[in-house]
Image (cartoon, rainbow, N blue to C red; front, side):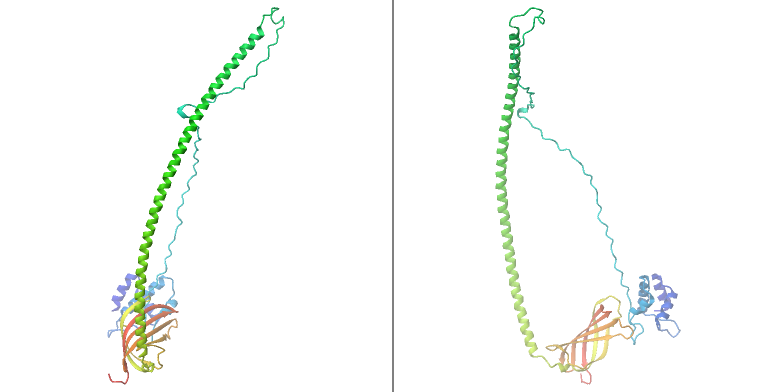
Amino acid sequence: MNEHRVLETLGRYKIDEQEVSEWENTLGLDIPVDPNGNKLYSKQHLNLFKNIKKHLLLGRSITEIKKLLVLPVEKKIEARMHSVPEPVIEKTHPPETHTIPSILLAQPSEKNILPLGEASITPSIRPIKRFASLPRRLSSGQTGGVQRPNTGLLLLVDRLMAEKDELQSTLVKLEKQKTHLFQGNEMFKERVSELQHQILQLDEQLKVQENIQLMDDKAKLQKELILAERRQSEVDHEVTQLQKQVQHLKASLANQIEPRNFIGSWLQEAHLKEVVFDNFGINIENTQSRIVKITTPPERLFGHTAIIETSFDYQTNTLWKRTETLVVSILSENRLQGELIAEYTLDGTPVARAIYTVTCQRQGARS
């Protein structure tokens, strides 16, 4: 990819030629050129410049960014950096609260309702007057000198008659109140009887509902019991299968080969099978071909399969580390086959993992 095309592509990310030149000088990038002296950039260069811009926007200095670069000896630019997006913290607002004014509702006072639609009668009962004493006699000066016979007796009779009439009126009012109270008492008894009848009906309904609920619960428990029995049967079947597998493993372990058969120099051919994850845009190779030396017998050996783990440190940046786990089986005395799991870690945190299919041929042996 020529320089003009690279700058045109980087211009979409607001990266100009001056920034590219500064980064090349600061990082000591050796950009190849064609016979005419024009710079030739690869896709790795393009991604590297974009990621440097992202890290700068995130507030990192060029010194911090250089620490994140992996520059192996055999290649000038080993790794591409992808910026890790800063975690976005969503601001949560407290739910709006609405103040509901307290409204004082006037409680209606209970009124005594008398039966038969009659208004309550509260007679003003006057205290019964005592019988008046005999009127005192009038003096001759008061009567004009004439004394009428039986005048005091007539006044006493009139007063007694008035008091009698007043007592009879009070008695009639009391009789009416008694009648109203009797009728109210009868209505109260009828209401109590109706409420008792309603209570009995509610008790019967509750009993019916409880019986229905008990029947539903019983049916649910029966279904759960059936499901539990089925799960138990499935578990028993799985246990049987596992026992068979264990027996098979025991039989295979009985035929285990000697660990020293893995010792030697092997030509390892690896082909990329899957990139499990890649958080930093590691430049993962598609194929590998190298000599692997196994000097000690593998400690983890299962039948014809061995697990060999090797760690590599980067001299240019001690924060980076690569761990390779080789899981291979012996097909013959001079041939191994299996998988290679390569994991890259930055300061102890896994950032990338890839799986290769590998075949190993013993060096010096005829194929």
